[in-house]
Length: 119
Image (cartoon, rainbow, N blue to C red; front, side, top):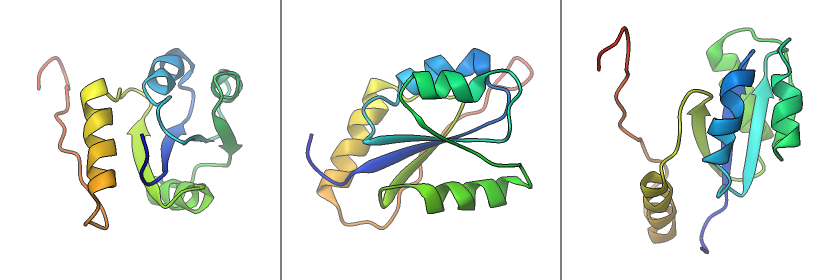
């Protein structure tokens, strides 16, 4: 689909069990950027093997890591995804349609958190 190009950003630290499923739902993005906080469980190697561009840097705090990731993104539009999150096909299409239609400088995606066995 044509339209603005998107970098999907995933911040990680020791997310080897999650990374494959997460990145599989981001294959539609023009770039997948994993900013890894010096994982010791092979997360970075797995992400590279799955086609992601991986940058490793020490973790200071989330704001610092997010800002660094945005500075590393190759495209103006970025989608931040946690390693335990998945982008559904419906959300993918909604993102692509919204970006193609234009008119906004940013978007917010509402979500629900599942914590301690409940929403």
